[in-house]
Length: 187
Length: 187
Image 1 (cartoon, rainbow over the protein chains, first blue to last red):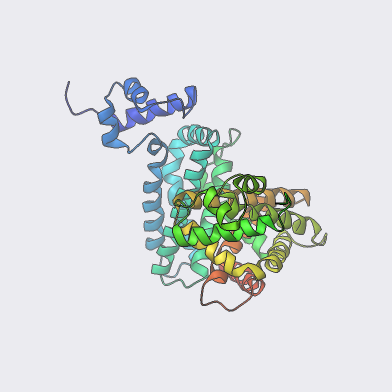
Image 2 (cartoon, each protein chain N blue to C red):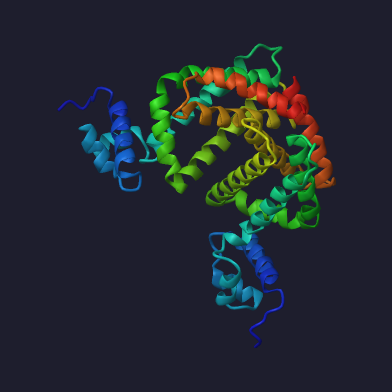
């Protein structure tokens, strides 16, 4: 058997999610995941630190995407416009992954430890967005509040987007939620 | 020794915080806390489920306070005005507890597990505020977004209030942060 495994990471992700959905997260071992993917545990640990990271490694990519979108927004864009651009950039990545996102959310909702991890990752993302805004010259408390608003819109839009009845694109929902936030805070 | 212990809860809280600050949260046992307070472990467990709850039991009170303030806001108050009233109500409780809040935050900042617990409690508080807004007839996504804004303002204002250099009241900071949020989202 060749040591190079085509798309090992993708196969491990798919196998893990199938097992988390079928058996539950707690009842799944790394050995189960590797076996289902036709790979070794050693290969699993070359790609993921532990079985939680299969669910959360995407958030590092999301954070890079947010930070670079905020940095690259036009110089005259308001802080809110800069984070809105980041949310739309996230949409282009998300759109193809909706079934994965839905299953992932179901697994997280069933496990309080994973929920705490998810909250912790979102708090880290929020801090990174605030730092990116400060690097654009946004002062305080505007930078922190805009980062809070960014994560708020993300959270509300994401829940609507993964809803089984939803047929709209993430970006379309983001635009609507940003407008709703403006209305709520202008009242 | 009488089974009734005057202000056992308060004595346990003070003893616990002193130990968490001096030795660290992990290094403190319930036996240490009870001994320092001159009480038994059994008494500790009559007041707190575990040593984490010394830090977090106040958040249930905070949640009741938020929910009732939102419910009691004037019928014609906007959703944002209703949560702003709740934040000011929190101020009246907080003001006397600033040294406790500062020490509590220091203990939480030093322990990732406590940080996750804190985030989880804040997420619960946010959901409770959203429900209270819906009970006032606020629709979606306005109810969720206003609850998000409430926790955002709370978070930013709280950090400023516990800052060692701060000399202003929580309510005064809340008013300023609400105005900053309006400015940021109006841009």
